[in-house]
Length: 156
Image 1 (cartoon, rainbow, N blue to C red):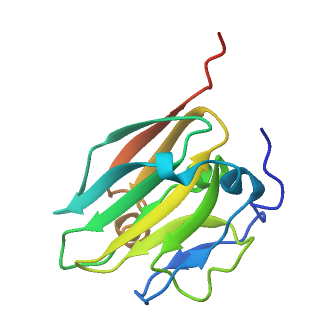
Image 2: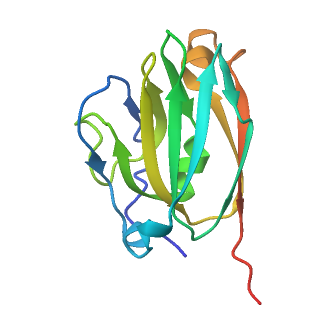
Image 3: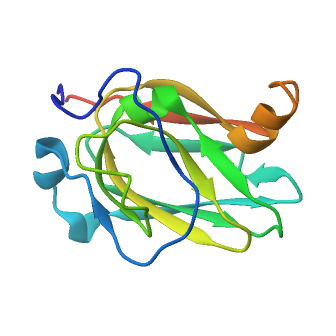
């Protein structure tokens, strides 16, 4: 399944400040699923470490990724290749700068805040994620890294 119009090459939206409200970025692939079947996965960062370090998802199923920052410092969930492999329904809360059709590469996580990303994986593969905030400050030499595995649709 190919999603057109979701990724705009070279555009980076870093959602830093927490504001009330949702940003709807719904694509045709995200609109076509039954969201009552969405599975919630939680990814928590605390003391500069993400847990869990590996998340496994299935292509074509709806998910809500709950990103929790349990630190008193800002972090950023950075996963540019992962964002190109999913169809996003919404990001809550979000900044007005995140408009429909904008390409995500990183989601800012203010201290003590939680963000929820509703999406459908559309491309199988292995995608790394990192704490983009720490990596950017230190030239990319440090920062927690993890892996998101999207399993292909199994055909009988």
